[in-house]
Image 1 (spheres, rainbow, N blue to C red):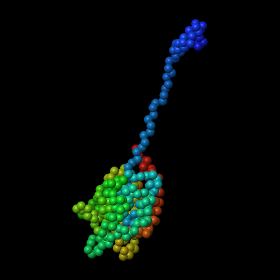
Image 2 (cartoon, rainbow, N blue to C red):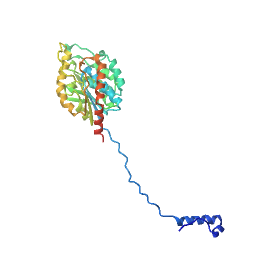
Image 3 (cartoon, rainbow, N blue to C red):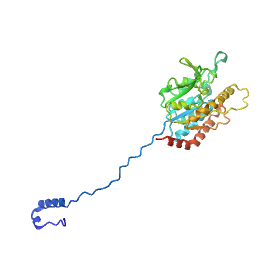
Image 4 (cartoon, rainbow, N blue to C red):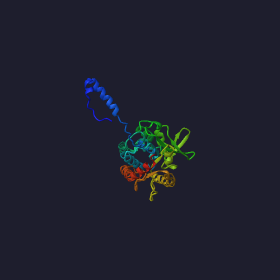
Length: 309
């Protein structure tokens, strides 16, 4: 048993070296068995959840398409960045600008400075199959996206048009962006059909007014659909363009019933009174898009959480 560290007379005679040796032996003899410490079991750090791939499906609606800009602005401000975007008709134009890397503020500037004359090139209907050729629209789009083809966009982009011969919807993910937007927006009797390869194409809204299924096809796990279609309106007078657009609205209503049910979130901006050819109401349309998306942000965040893993 170890009682003291006081050196004995014999030890003192050993001098300093002996003293140190004695202390070392003493400590070795007094060493006790190591104390066993029970540590808590290792805890694995929480695994960060992966958000679902977000797809944005932008629908057709001519001049009402400015509402898409407001929706995108709110998503950007909330820090929600879609992984891909697909558009039909007016939605294909906005989708192209967004996929090219433009911010919400930049797209609003484009919308507010857009002149109808920049993409209207009239033809003589008696000698053609539409009042507008559509070349000007294609040039306008390509200028806005720095002449990038669809496959070179920073964000995966899809553009939907209708094959005039088969009546099938076609998803363009490669090729000239302006030409694809022109095809997607080629309202029959307004724009001439667009020939790409050996096929002719017209407005994608005929078969896919809001391209939800194509967002899924491109790999989206959660789809935000923006429906800017208008309800049929009365008293169209003799406005040929409005009658044509009203016809599309009637056709698209029944198609949307089926297509939109596969979307995780459907954003419907309040565009009452804004006609499809009303370019003067662009600011009002943007604000309507913002208001609709802001209202649905909590619902979107809940959907994102539910699909995260």
